[in-house]
Length: 156
Figure (spheres, rainbow, N blue to C red):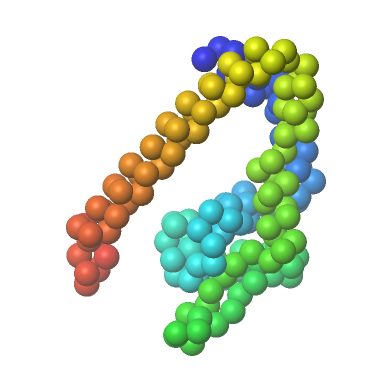
């Protein structure tokens, strides 16, 4: 694990550049990352995911709307519900943050021999396999928790 941590530190500068240039607060970043992961969400659902109230979320979303990073629109099935989603500019900001450091990683990989690249590729396949397995397990656990929730209160 020591090598992994060393590598993370070597990439930290490249990865942090988009974060520092975005001028997002931590709460705004969390909102945008959740929208990137889950797509357009109802305001109430997003507030629950963040652990904040509707009023607090509304203010945070207002500031993101002004920056043209998210949209707020009526739900097509329920006009009382506001759906929040990333704009093209918001998607670009999040994609830039997520993929930061890729150029440096490509440069480093170009310096490896074919044999070394084969080893790295196999290691990446193993990591992707395990990450996918873990994500599937977490999704199954979340569905199980939802199924066990009290339909009246939404609580277990």
